[in-house]
Image (cartoon, rainbow, N blue to C red; front, top):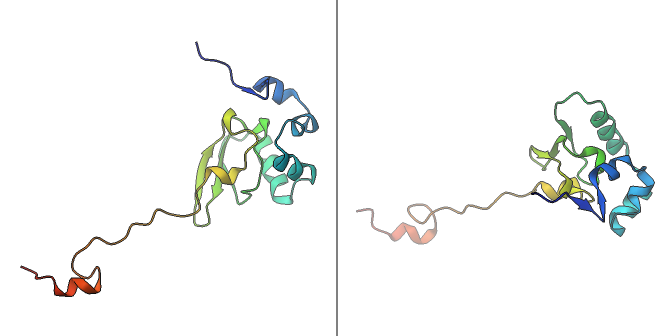
Amino acid sequence: MPKNFQYRGRSVDDLKAMSMDEFINLLPSRMRRSLRRGLSNEQRIVLEHLRQEDGKPIKTHARDMVVLPEMIGKTIQVHSGQEFVEVRINEKMLGHYLGEFVITNKLVRHGKPGIGASRSSMYIPLK
């Protein structure tokens, strides 16, 4: 039997029923301070689009947006600096920033050794 998810002792249904101020008081200090200063215009637009319930993913550059209970179950495409990466929000993401789930750099794949890979490869016989 799977255990129900709890965030700071509260179930997801309780968190969705809470006011924004009550939820903010449960968050860690960095996120709490960020939300108490107010939402930016871009963050406000993301929330409005999420509340419209049209079903398609929302594209955003707001990597500093804190995941709120009303976002659970939604799909958001977050910009990584080069492309939009799809993120499906679940309960375990509550209180984190959207940018934490989208990596901004690619894995470096250096060239394989062989012809043209380095200066020393000029002297390897071709056979």
